Image (cartoon, rainbow, N blue to C red):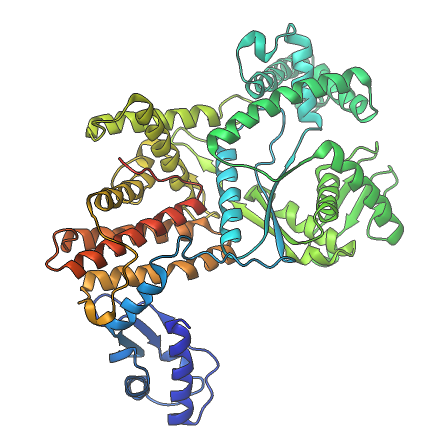
Length: 594
């Protein structure tokens, strides 16, 4: 039983015994640094049940705990806060229960019928992945790993948006201007080649708009009547009708893109258990639109388009099928959700990792699925996140002003190389070892910088700031891990030895470090509940700060007694394992040497 559970039960006993009152919950918080104590009980929250002066109530409960709980050796009361001083033996005994656990903090006993599906990435097949996709992938992958560590069975997935007008724009531009070039003939990754033609379409479209405006058309008329757009719309209709030539071109160009995506995913260190394609799931969506028409969930307008009226739910009317019978994003998303439950019957909930510009879309989707009668719809969650900006401004795919994901990953490794060489810490490394380390540091810096921010907040991404070896950065934490590995290599301590509480004279810095370690399992659970890797990232930074304070104030290998050396090496080893475990939830590797 944890200390908080023990204290909760005893505090409830104290309130019952002293005040003849029943306390439902007990609120704890960390003790402020300026007061002695290891854990603080909030007395103010008890005043609903216990009437009186909060200081006197705190004193009474404190005396009761000292008399009745072995772990509580003293207390002090500051206003409405009861600061409890916990015995050193408690911390040593607790440490002995975790020091040999390789996956400390993780709940590996997941419930078989409580699976969660996490969707992330979900790109369009008309352009390569960019910085915005990187935040999406890192968030989705990390949330999936955190949910797994919290005790859930998890499936990672994506829906590849491989159909629609945007895809036809790239296809048409390649057909018109591509001269049959391929990834092989150009040496370009397939996703980059196709992306170039998406940009080319936009350039030609803008030229045609200007020509039509010069001929007397209004801007709206010119945008609608531009010949290249009309051709793309015709191509989409042919695709939906199964035209052999159009489908063959679509298959070829999408194949180029998938090969390119696979390289990027491998470089980024993310993976998927199941892929879904919009070109397949939109058909199932159309089937359920037909079913919904019969049951009255949807209605048809005079032009033949199909809508869902959500005004009574505080939303608006939403189109689910165009007048010409073609599907919209909502149609596809309805079909995808239903297909996923068919494929994975043990899934009870889904997490959609999609930017906050789609907040309304997911409100509508979840509500429509509820109206269609799917009970699991109540367990759908939109992991909404803010955009990523650069110091140079906002990115636009169609104008070719995005930061390419592959280029950014490579640039981060180059920056790590430059800084590492300046610091001169790589003597004795082979060239291959150096290159691998640069990748580890660069990718760790990128991932940590993005994941340490609350998902809902917008990010201004500064590559150089992210790779600093000081402060709240990935490389700083990686360096601390490597420093601990250096200590372990120099020591000859048997880490399996278990020291009794009476064999250890606990230093204040050791106590602080164990208190920080104690927080890890709860942090994992909170991060899972809140779908927030930022909680894991910032926990790890706090742990590293506590270790570095310990390292600077307490001699480890040069301690006075053998028991002190044993305990401090064991403590360092446990901190290192916890850093590694925490960083694994963020998809970040830790180097053995730096």
